[in-house]
Image 1 (cartoon, rainbow over the protein chains, first blue to last red):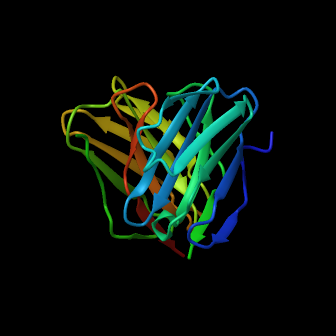
Image 2 (cartoon, rainbow over the protein chains, first blue to last red):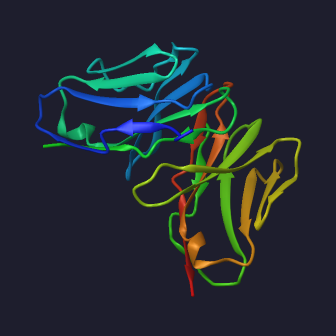
Length: 113
Length: 112
């Protein structure tokens, strides 16, 4: 298995534009996590899915953020409209179960100008 | 709420020595604690998990201890190598069966 795959690796966009980040999970993993990492705040959990169902989205900053999991192997995180303060590295991670080791993707470095 | 403290300053260690990183927490004792390694431009990579009823866990040159009285975990790398240079993150079970609370990480530099 190639591991968790995220795309794009880098995204530069103008304020107000829609941004979609993509994640392919490891086959057989039931849990999916989207995280955001910044120097100031470290790693923050945005949303957690289990068996394709969103369980906890309390970390999603605002209604501008939305996440979907249309099937067991794929997820998207959308920001619309994007703002400069959304600039960060966004990681998705998957695990077999919710409380076992998490496998992270390479991350998407988002810059909103 | 639970707070985690890891040394914010980089830790410089001579190659071959043992590196020891600290993770302190302030509130309830978590059911388990995990250590991850993160290299620049990459996602964290899982290293070890230790549960509250375990005092120590080992994996090759790595050793983790968990002291619920001191509310502290120590992460040791023996016979350190320059390739061990990275940022090391600890993460605690956050009160639910899925949530992890992450430390800010400690940057470890192993000098040849």
